[in-house]
Image: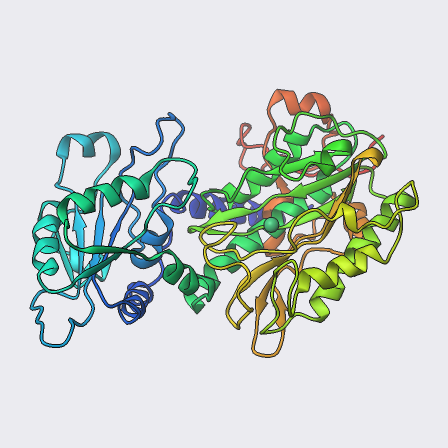
Length: 500
Ligand SMILES: [Mn+2]
């Protein structure tokens, strides 16, 4: 390999490091996108909307990194603690409201806290309106007075109300109680369904962020395909994939990574990742990145040693056939619901249940135990009515699966589609999906320096920790030291799959 080539690789790597360091704060959409969504929401309600961001005290874990409440983020792009949003629609006939139509309320500046946590936007900042794009930015302490003035104009207010058996920190209950003590005579209506319906149809600026999460997640899956072999542990494959996410500037995984081998391939939300991958195993990888708030959700099922066994291939082909059957019917008006009119799930189920059998000769429909798909967006299982007929601009997963515990055989294939006017666009088309394409990708010689820009992260490998080196003895390749004499920054390409 020539010196110039390595200079180029080093340059690309440094650019990625730069992007990764910039990626610490999310890339917001343009202010106009958030403003358009606030305007659309105002047009759908007959009373003021009050929403609260997270305070940063929702999680006591030392590893917690603040992440805004999704609906609040969707309407503001504001990713800091302790804010509130007030939207005021047109008043009822005969009533008047002279105040702003939208106000972002921010907590008072705390210079001591900023020494620990960094600068925060405050209402007194002269550029607060320009930075947020919200018409008025005020101190949080003024929210209560505005609410009381609005209560004289509007009988009904909208906010997020708690759901039955809501898990986790009781954010909505706390703020519902806070509002009830301040708006004693007003009716509080739930905004969840309205916001969910809006969030299901993506704006172009949201699609760009989803596409980034999808492209990075595809790179991670390709890296896993190139790395996978018996002897690795599940957590090492997951670590490789998270490394690709983070190096590309994505802030976290969108959900706990699932790398399940053997019996674990049949456990839907397996996340312990402690098992050694053995020869002949099937491995389910359900791993997706969160980038700028938006989450990808992709699953591939791989043979540990690069070739599906006949039985693994048989089950794989049935799941793929079910996915293709659902895709063939995918267009606006179809639904993800398990049954009823236009059910895509029914199509996938019928395919699975009419192909192949288990060891007892029974049909396989009983082993397809989860839904066919779901919306993705700011949440991996995104907001909104999951049975709503599909519309252009929606982004959903199509993910049939067969899980036969007594055979230690689970297969799931999960792809992401954008619903279009007359069908769909497969956003994960770059990732091998057929058994043959997967085997070819896994067999691709990794010493080959032909990396496309999209794959550059997957093609590079930084020095591994000692524990990985024990399991992954590597033969140094000729010419892999950096020309700069930087001994600590040793860059090695992935070694060939067939090691001596
Ligand atoms: Mn999924």
